[in-house]
Image (tube, rainbow, N blue to C red; front, side):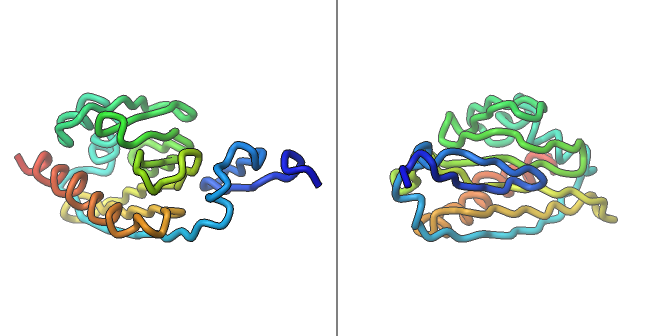
Length: 162
């Protein structure tokens, strides 16, 4: 069977994306991946936490790095001066963000995308953010895990507590 005739299925939350295999780098077909889950309490409402991630000006401010993002499903985004790139798949204001996501890392195959999911829920101290990042190249999972804490959650907490 010719390679172009084979399809690779990828699930992004409620959406099934089917793409020809030829669009994926060969080493992504057998690459080992891993997932992370992080949970944090933020001293703000779920809507405000969602806005911090999805508003280009606020995102750029709390990360101290350029971001290009729109609160529109299907739109592309970049963050950290294009170190991060992806697409907004599902956006439910104040409740959920689902994105196709990749880092511009040497060990991250060019055409491989992971999935990030932000779930916001009310809490007596503000809101709970349950964060899931799946399909991360296994060789990068610790770096990515630490990166979320150091470059997103710590600056976001600082921004919200100022």
